[in-house]
Image (cartoon, helix red, strand yellow):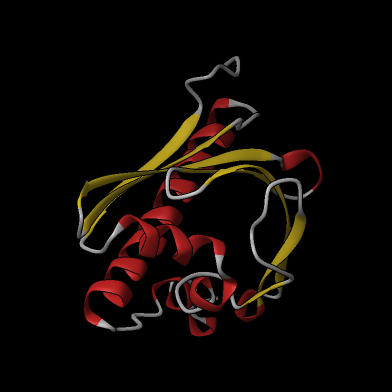
Length: 155
């Protein structure tokens, strides 16, 4: 299968919090580390390259921030070596207290089986991140969905 712009993963969710609160949760590692990765070398800022670390999986990913439009959009490139993809978050204020978040991860490459696995894993991962964020921001609950996805006992 040839790669096309159709090779992307998508996850979306309504979060009942103001757009500024939801946006800040993705740019501020003090919040993001509660729902996704465990450590970050810094806040997301256009032109900056940082690292995200998942200590429970002994995994680090370099992240290049391509563009940020406050309360509207975040675009990054991430991955390891030849596995770079682009992730775009779009934030839409539904009203003063609700935000619709869309995350698209694009640029996957490889044979059909590889593409299917990458799209599946990315869709699943970003869905867990959005569900984690929804629980944290709406109910103050830390579900640990990302950390519990691959328990050591199952490996």
